[in-house]
Image (cartoon, rainbow, N blue to C red):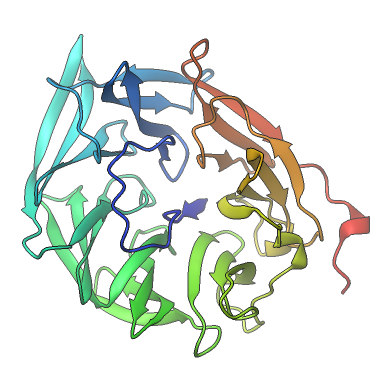
Amino acid sequence: MTVCAIESPSTGEDDRSPGRGCVLTADGAYAARLARDGDSWFPERWTLDGPEPYAVPLPGHQPEEPGTEVQPLGDGRVLIHRRAARRHLFALLYPTGPGTGELPLGAMECAAPGTRLALLPPAPGGARAYALSVGARSSVVWQVAGGAYGPVRLAEVPGRCSGGVWLDRAGRLLALDRELEGRTKTVVVDLELGQVSPLLQIAPDSDDRLLLADLDSGLLLISSDAPSPGQERLGWGVLGSTLPVRFPTSLRLPECTAVPFAIQPGQLLEPEACAVALRIDGPVGTWVGLWRPAERRVRHLPAPKGWLTGAGLWTHEGVLRLPYATRETPCAVAELRMPERDPRAERPA
């Protein structure tokens, strides 16, 4: 299983336009996105674990406003997060006959000016969903779906947090990138005990962020300016290892921005054998990069037309599944296969 982080490390953004991509459950069985009908936006659920992918529209009584978030749950329902001024409203959507059923989950109000609240990445198991509110001096993790009541406050973290990576299959340990006293370091929040502990601190004066983690192999994808002060670089390490984080030159792509979005699962205790998918943005557009820690190169492949940018999932067999939508094919999945390991590109022992 691969757990994913929110792509942008910024804590101050508030992009109120619907995203181009979609959100996948941790096991890749379902996806959800805001689809477009003319100038209107509506939620749409994709089923991906069957013989053929198919989409189910879940429109409400009126079009959705910009800034609306959707997230699929493991049972096929879709969590929707709507904003109305400083109020945040949560509900579960599901198909019912010719229409859409909606189960309200409650609402929250962020009274402090400048406070942001956004959904965290889907939790393992798909039974619960969480959100992160970020204020001027602290951040709070909330459970917004899967409980007996409405939104429940779980833990408060001093500092401004971003990201979000799950570190266990129980959905108890959550890694967040915390900005405190001018530096960003990754911490772990125990949602059951409400405790916060450090996880990633490469150098005292560096900004370090955790982007992805794979629970089978322990592979971590990291962003840090420790090797090049003032310039973030991609690196990798192993959860629980005493070895230092490595920053391969193959991940330095001039004039491009590379963001990892999926790690191949099932490579037990073999982090260097895991295939990693990168979204690469450059002067000529967006494409897909495939990379392994054991190899000294990135393989560049064109993204499928209509790719829901940044969304994808590896299978255990090394097939990268990328959801895409075009006018001719409104719901489909393209598959890219990771080539076999090239011994000539292996790292020296």
